Amino acid sequence: MAKQCIGLDIGSSAIKLVQLKPAGRVLALQNFGIEPVPPQTIVDGVILNHSGLVDAIKNLTRRIHLKGKSIALAASGNSVIIKRLTIPAMEGAALDEQMEWEVRQNIPFSRDDVVVDYEVLVKQTPSGQMEVLLVAAKREIVAQYQQVVRDAGFQPVIVDAAALALQNSVELGIGFAPGDTIAIINVGATYSTLSIVSDGRPSFNRDLGTGGNTYTEAIQRQLGIGLDGAEAYKVGGAFAAAGAMADVVPQEVHRILWQVSEQVAEEFQRSLDFYMNDAIDARLSRIYLSGGSCLVPQLPKAIQDRSRIPVEIINPFARVVVDTRRFDVEYLRVNAPVATVAFGLAVRRVGDSE
Image (spheres, one colour):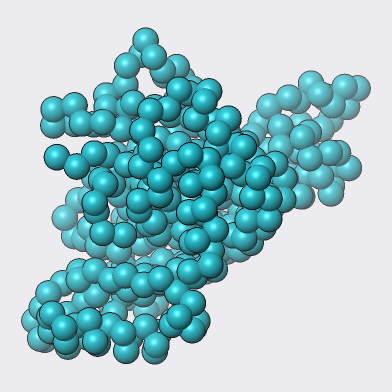
């Protein structure tokens, strides 16, 4: 049986790592860790501080005593395009040739500049068509991340799309009900990823230019404080750091978080409306949130109030065996939403197609 990959989610604010191992019919947690990365290390998906990122991976893997070399990575942001296509039913060489044509029609980059893969979702519809998922990523960006992993002493064996890793996490951590259509929103630091899954298959994906930094920048600007203080207020901690203003600042922070949450929820809703208006007989049953900034307490309520759809924060470890002698269960619970993409990567196996 092929070995599980180590899931490594390299974000602009932190690196998240998840390692799983089979335990009978379920999976057990083998390793988990989070490591911050220096500011401006990654900007708009481009690595600007290669050595800083390599050092962060080395620091994390040393600290958690990681064993294993095979890494599954995620690509996201403007460097990745995911399209669900309907084409005439075919297979073999004819399908490969058709997909090359589809790449040139649907991907706004030169063919030589992208890495491409596709997966057949429905072999034949009642109308004699087939549905295919096309994924393309900028070759240069993928190569950057792969080189960082190699320079840190590991072997990148799979590059997945973050949106598809999110789907894997929900499927294994929660499960899909037959016929259900759900939305997954991963709220990252600089942008968010929206993935809609219908009847267990990817249906719609979009990267949105808003994330946790939207909160941080608003707190910094309106309260006139530094980055560290703004980050602490964002996640609801360190109120006492305001000193003499301790009785006043928390109320101001609460107001700012509500204000920004309403703005972020509105942007998410526009994308949900776009999908709902375009899809036939589509009805969302639930919205799942992941990523560090989904822990801002005002955000889930703002999204639920605006969408009128139940919102739930993901815990991908819900069905995973966890050794309480090795892992701090409370730390794992608090950080579970942050690890969602890394978890989705960790369920991949060495030898899987990318």
